[in-house]
Length: 141
Image (tube, rainbow, N blue to C red; front, side):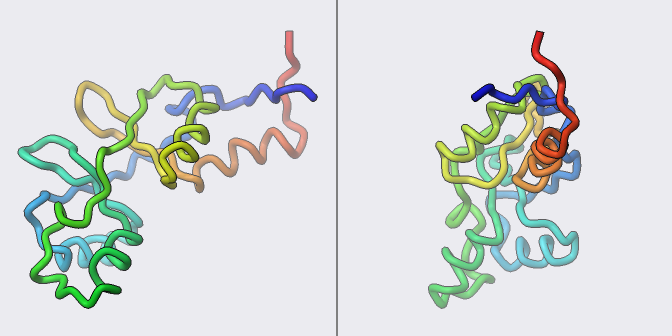
């Protein structure tokens, strides 16, 4: 069995550049308002202006709401997933699923010079692999 050589080689080729941020001292209610208004599934948490973690819909529901906590009284920093798992733009795309499985996460963030510039989630990976499976393959040298 051969290992497929994907047409999309790097994270930069598949990443989504739509990233939203929230301060670690913000309330979970503020996070809820932001994810609902922006229609997104995750916010990068900033602590002292630097990315420190991520708060996802899963974090909000399971670590706050399902426990009966009042989202007005809980800080994002209390429920955020840490550390923020990052890759560089030119990380080979094949490394992303390995990181997702290793860390039991659904997205990795793309970092450049200390700034988060995008992410790759399962949704971005689907077309990468689908293109290969449906017959658009590169031949191996």
